[in-house]
Image (cartoon, rainbow, N blue to C red; front, side, top):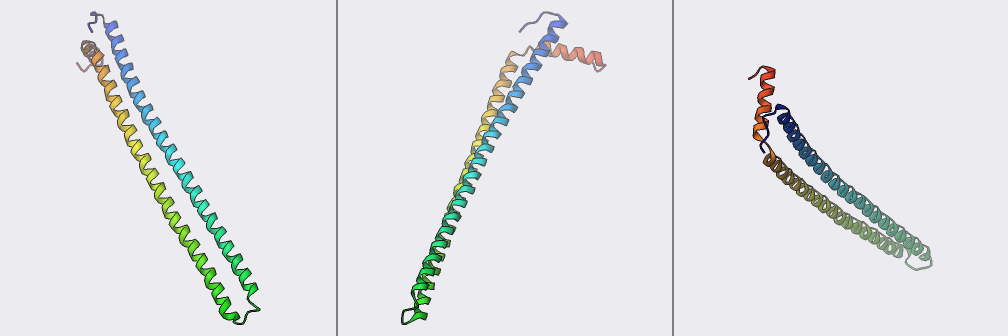
Length: 170
């Protein structure tokens, strides 16, 4: 780009180049921000799903506990007429405790599965964030490269020289 030997035109070109670089930087910052927001949204969604799944698992376990207790209470009420009441009540209690343990074990296993799913979702969000940042950086570098291709080196050098002379450094 050949510019006339007009200091005003060269200053204008220098301002245009500065604006181009500023636009490139702002675009990069915007891409990073949007990528971060996308990742944050995925993490929030994963957290909401995680909490809901845990809550559902706990509610299911609580329902099983209540059912086991009701079965136990009904069985205890039916035992007084039997010959070996003590043995019968012990068996009913053992059955009750087995149901409680089974419900606890199932809830614990399900909780571990839910947690693993949550961790995987967070890892995937992190990978996506890294990918988005990498793409934003590559786009930034391409944009900077384009600005440098359009740059009039003489205009930049002359603007620097004028600035240096005016400020006493040249």
